[in-house]
Each structure stands twice: as structure tokens, then as C-alpha cells.
Amino acid sequence: MGRFINPFTDFGFKFLFGREVEKELLIDFLNDLLVGEHIITDIQFLNNEQQPEVKAERGIIYDIYCVTDTGERIIVEMQNREQPYFKDRALFYLSRAITQQAKKGVWDFQLDAVYGVFFMNFVMDKDMPAKIRTDIILSDRDTGKLFNNKFRQIFIELPNFNKEEDECENDFERWIYILKHMDTLDRMPFKARKAVFERLEKLASKANMTQEERAQYEEEWKIYNDYFNTLDFAEKKGIQKGLQEGIQKGRREGRQEVLIETARKFKEMGFTTEMIAKGTGLSKEEIEKL
Image (cartoon, rainbow, N blue to C red; front, top):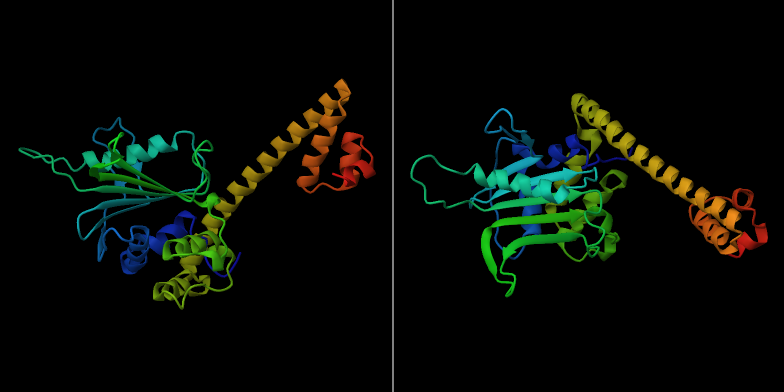
């Protein structure tokens, strides 16, 4: 483990962004996320666990739920596990935050705006263009004109962010770079540009945590790390199984091109020439030419 905490563990995320005493960090991030739109000067954290209206309903837990000084309700969620209906889940979260604004008695239906900010350690939709940020608003289909500003979703797909430190062009990208690489950094970049990053360096340093905080973080980090190691192992096993089936098919059908393509994929995965030759039956010379 590195010098700084991993912000995508549950403890790390809430430790940095979900505490009243350190709310300036979340305010600064949200302002960089919404730059040019309006400026948030204060936030109030709301109760994260939203009780269901009836006992049979499934309760929902938001990672961070807050309201700004101008009335916007903002849900900030960190999601590491890929889910088949994540778009629906995000819609459900925001819908509940809207319906829970209902008032008893005579009410004119005026709502506070609800924003959802979703960090994802996976690609949400592989059929969509690969980009770091997707903004969803309610607009007219023909004209594109904003229809209602009370509903907005912002999806941040971390695997699609590949910029290096010196390639970051604005403070939003600098935030994403730091968050994505924080647990592997030896120093906190961009401190000269933005004072909040100096505060972030002190807060995220494991050396500044109490013994209890450190123990809780390390326990959650093990769970986080085990999950991704298991996922990586399963993916590699699946790839290997597919490649082995390709080898068998190539041998059965006598198709040299299948074996060559399979060998190329093995090579890209880092297998040695000897291992590839043994598995495919190709010569070392043929493999080295790939």
C-alpha cells in the first residue's frame, strides 16, 4: 500500500468527502464539476439512509447525500462493482430523492433540483462513446433545449480517463487524476495551483490517521483489493479458457490462422515463447515473428 488512502474504498470515500468537518473538499470538487454554472458556498449533509415508505420496500443507502446553500440536493456515489442495470439504479436513487420532497396538505409541487454524481470503476455502457464524463439532463428531443433543470445525472467513468499529470487541462481533470491515482502517489500534485490539494494531501495521508481510522481503512482496503484480484483472476481464466478452445478448434480443423491468432493473443498476455509453442504447436520462430 502507498502513502495515501484509496478514495474508492467505502471508508476512504466518506473519510475524504462525507464529513462535516472536511466539507470544503466536497464543495471544491462540486464547484469544479459544475464550473461556469453556479458557485456552491456551503453544503449540509443529509441522512444517508433513506427509510422506505412501507416495510416491504427495499431501503436505499446513498454514499453521500447533501443539500447546497441554494437548495440543490446532490447524491454522490462511488461504485466499484459493475452492475447490469446501473442506469436504472441511478435513476431510482434520484427518483426517491425527488418523491421524498412531497409535502402533506396543499402543495404546489415546486421541487428542489436533484443531482446525481456517480463515480464508476467500470465502463457503464460499452456501446456508448468512451469518455470520462456523461451529463444527462431533461431536454426537448427536437431542439435540445433544456425542459426542466430539476433533474441531472453526471456519470464519471474512471477507466476512460487516461491522461498523465501534465496533460490535465482544468481543475476537474486534476481532481480525477488525483482520485484515480491517489493510492499509488508519492506526492500530491497540483498543490501550487490549488490550495485545497494541499489540504487533501494532509487528510489522505495514512500517517495522519488515528490508530482506529487506520485499522478500519486497512480492513476495507483488503476487501476492495480481494474483490479486484478475484475479478482479474476470473477474467484471465475466462480468456485462457477461450484461447484454449481456439487452439483445440484450430488443431481439429487444421486451420493455421486460428493457431497464429491464438498465439498472438497469448503473447499479448505476457506468456513466454516456450509456453506458447507448447500450447499451440507452433515453432518458436513463428511465434517470435508475431
